[in-house]
Length: 339
Image (cartoon, rainbow, N blue to C red; front, side, top):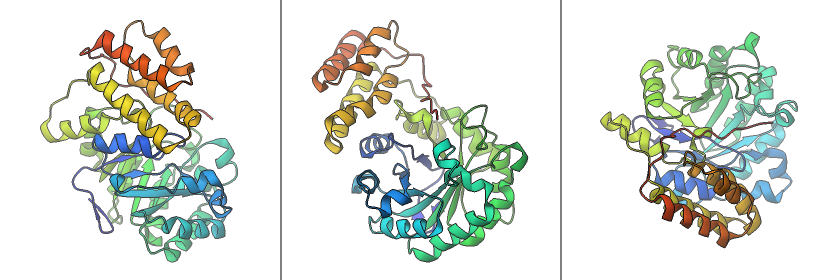
């Protein structure tokens, strides 16, 4: 699969952009485990053009994580074009436009999935960004706003006509948020539409190797994007790649292996962020790294409440000492996203 001139090989695996999750430390861990393409956390166009510290910081990218895309969201064409030009200066491999985020404060302003209520504006904005930047432009969106407006087959054709180089589709409507099962049939309909020439990347409910292979085989998508199932479980990329290559399921990493990964992740998080923020944002990962251990509630609570780095590291070493080579049966922690 290629996005413009970016060669990604066969059956590429993408890390979905997730706010306060896909920071450089987590991207490094996912890259170590076999992610083929990653994105920054999504960046507010308004924050970027106003030189907002948090938005500008999200443009920090590193050679070890390439190829990488910067994802932008906003509801005004001029602001999005200006933000795309700023993001281009950070030298990512591509610019991605978010037309899929369902969070109320974003969608109700007309940004993210809110753009699915104004398809002409979506198309006009995409055309303007494609014209403005020299980098490839891609889009991520959903099936539609609700069950009565699942027009993704037509929307995909119109987006392709703007000049975008790939399209990622999450198999839910905005109204669904993250509830219910993702519907891949319409993703498949887009991919198998003879008019479509650009790569189609499927997203939604990929939680393990067998599900990933099923989606590749059944719907013929060019790539798969994984989001919530990576949180505290970055080795999912390794597991999927091994299964796609050999047809065999890898055993769950041992507690020793998970402890090594958790400590490396924590150290990198502290390297890229101020201490307290790094720890607060690591909690969602740490609570899932060791999910499935018996009688883990008290230890988990400690990981979720302490703000002391040394105490976190000591707790992880205690987990290692107690469980060592033990492998949990629980292979599918999924981070819950709420509004």
